[in-house]
Image (cartoon, rainbow, N blue to C red):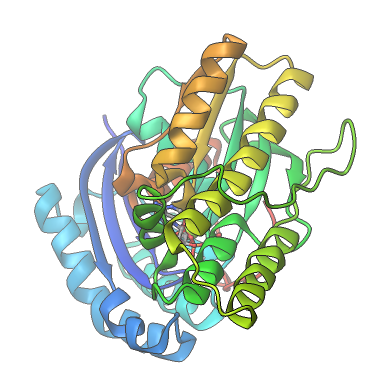
Length: 335
Ligand SMILES: Nc1ncnc2c1ncn2[C@@H]1O[C@H](COP(=O)(O)OP(=O)(O)OP(=O)(O)O)[C@@H](O)[C@H]1O
Ligand SMILES: [Mg+2]
């Protein structure tokens, strides 16, 4: 008999629910984005996000079940993101999942959001199996992860300051592009020359795959101030393209070096920044040169969604890793 898992995701500003069959088949994937609500503030306002999750969750969960053609009685388990993320936002999803699990006597599975981002690749690529190296580049994380098994991970590198997505968002704000910055900056960069301005790259030496993006961020801000002081015009498209190149090159080089060290033939991308076309193209090229197989999810599974949480939750469910009614939100949960 097949297993149907209802998954709930509410770690940031997307209220999402999905139903998955046997972990990898998405029967429904409902995402209610709060971007229009937070846009006017230039970023996510945590309290507003939590309140909107409370309003949205019943409808989003109902739609996920209807679209999947099932009811609570057909489910095998309920999976939910319990961290990392905004504490109030996480609590709304965790509370909803606990209520459903308790009322329907279903197993409850707590899922790490980053585990979810990695699992998005299993949905998109049925043939993909661990082990592989995954770059998780999102709004809050830049990790190079060695995925040993479906539920076992080793962090090979991480950012020492800003996450890649955070850097995109901050530079987009400096350029007056608004929120969310990543896709808007990418669009502008398409019209620019990525070789126009040289920005610094940080490396911590051989065998260390950590990132640092605060240097390039400061260099961009200093460049803007200097040009303004000199009364010289800034070509925003060149600036965006040059910044994007600096970030993409660091992500590609460190990930490829980590894959070489692990003698790993498969590399995957995950998280919101992996929606970036320049990043995908640079990884396509590097994978070809290094004889590696590269996987990345479709755009809809790169940013926050509940299907990826259902997939990660399925493998925990199969392993018998269950939470109980004491499950709490853990804002700084580690992988
Ligand atoms: N095309 C793009 N180019 C660059 N960055 C992008 C693109 N699309 C989305 N992003 C960035 O991805 C991030 C959002 O991704 P995601 O939803 O995975 O992050 P998050 O859930 O906020 O953080 P985390 O997953 O670390 O908790 C934002 O920082 C956004 O700017
Ligand atoms: Mg995310």
